[in-house]
Image (cartoon, rainbow, N blue to C red; front, side, top):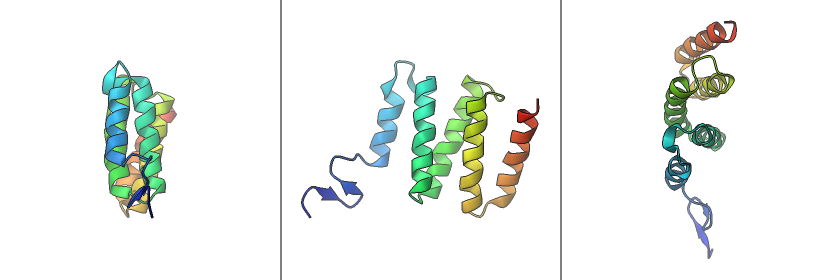
Length: 110
């Protein structure tokens, strides 16, 4: 079929290209709040597509950056952590998911 690639229509960039574009888009680079929001959205898209390892890698990286930039108690940081627990559970990493859930609850109640 003309105009398509194994990953979809030819106008849709592959995930690595999209991730590189996200990081370089904003003047603040990889630590800009908009970059962090876009990275979190991309991790969620990867999760939805069943790309669990890639979603986990990007989710962990985004969580680390959000903790550093926004702080551990920021609602967006906690959202990213929650999203990561979903990925971890679907990967069968229940112990890691529970540990992260405990961390979220300890931050959410502070």
